[in-house]
Length: 257
Figure (cartoon, rainbow, N blue to C red):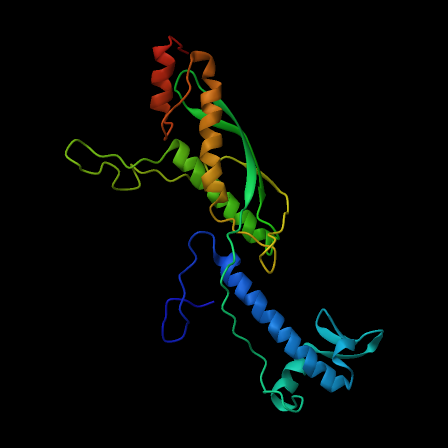
């Protein structure tokens, strides 16, 4: 896919808001279906069969009930330019502009268990389980990677990252020594699973997943810490939950190592 070059690429809005598969993916699916239908007509012409009798299998078209009578997709593609049916425009390509009829609604559940060091206020994520549902999964590795990245971002939001200013409005988080980014050392181990509830209006049943993890996980992290301190009367802690904040809470309640 190419974007951003108006000499070669059509108008587009980019990939924000987890829209790649819900919009561009849907357009690609509809184009593929149009191409498949045209290819089926060409295959029927090549096989000298009625169009309704031609069925698609992986990589080929065949006459229903006669597996030996078939043509491969490369053969059909070649014929689309050299031997199309009478009256058909040559070529095997399609354009589709997809206007989503509705939003897609991914959902999931996150469970977090934490330990708190009473001496330092350091929070350790002992276990984190995430179950997401982004509808039909097209590429499991990409989905898992997006969730891993989103959870890591959520971890950073909950425990590390803050844009702070002094009384004169000067930014105190102007570089990555002050605005922290988690590495593999700090990042917890994620335990992932999924359910699959296809979107009822998307051509592939797919939903977005890019922001699911970084929206849901900070609440799980923070609530786990608040729950661990609830016996002290703690009901809320502003993010990021730094060791210094936890240390002060513990000292205010007379808890020391």
